[in-house]
Image 1 (cartoon, helix red, strand yellow):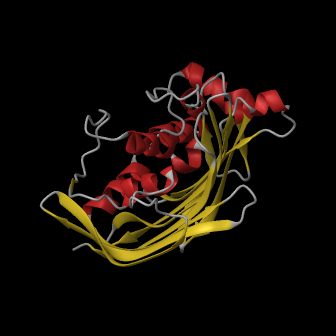
Image 2: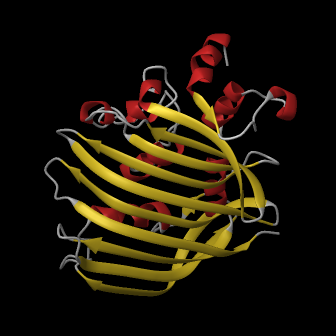
Length: 292
C-alpha cells in the first residue's frame, strides 16, 4: 500500500483491543486491510471444494411473497474428482411443491443457479490454479457467483448490473464514508482468529444506505496463516433494474491441512426487471473429503 492509502485508511479503523500493531505482529492496520483486499485463501478453499472428492447434503426451499414455503428440493450425493475432471452423482433426491415446470425444467432461476454452481450436470474441468482471467466457457450464473463471492473489497470488478459491482469496492476512498472497519479476535473451531468486520455506519439516511450494496462482511482469519475460516455477508441493493436482500454464511475447516468449505447457507430474495421476485433459502453441508 502507498503511504497515501495508509493515511486514508488508518482513521477509519476501530480496534476492539490493541491486537494489530507493527511491534506485536509485524504489520500495521493498513497492512491488515491490504491482506484482506488481496486475500485468495477464500477463493482457493472453493477451488479445493471442486478439486477434492467429498460428500454433500443440501436443502433448498422456495417461498412466496407471504413467506410461505411453496417448494423444496433436498439432495444427498457425492462429488467425484479424477485427473483434473470432476462430476457429481446424487444418491438420493426429494422434492415437493413448485420446483419443476411441466417439461421438467426448473421453475425458478434460483434453483438453476445453485445447481450450476454446486451440482454441475456434466463433467467439468478442475484446477488449483488461481487465474484473474475470465473463463470464456463460464455461464452468467457462475460469473455472478464469483463476483459476489470473491470480489469483496476489490475495485476492479468487471461485472456490472445496474452499478452494483462498483459498490463491492468497500475499501475505496469514495465508499469509506459509509463504513466502519473493526478488528478484534476470537477462537473459532479451536482456531485462534483475527476478526475483521466491515459494516454500514449507523445514522446513514436512506439515500446513503442505498450507496452501500454490502451492508456487512464478517471474516475470521486463522492467525497462523491468514486463511479465512468463516465469513458472513449481508447484501441489500435496489434500483430500477435489480433488487436484492441476501445473507450468506460460509464455514471452512482443515482436512489433512487442506483448507475446504464445510457449510454454506444462503437466505434472501432477488428481483430483476421483467422477472418475478424469488425468495429462497439454501443449506449445503460438505463432508468426508478424500484428501491424502
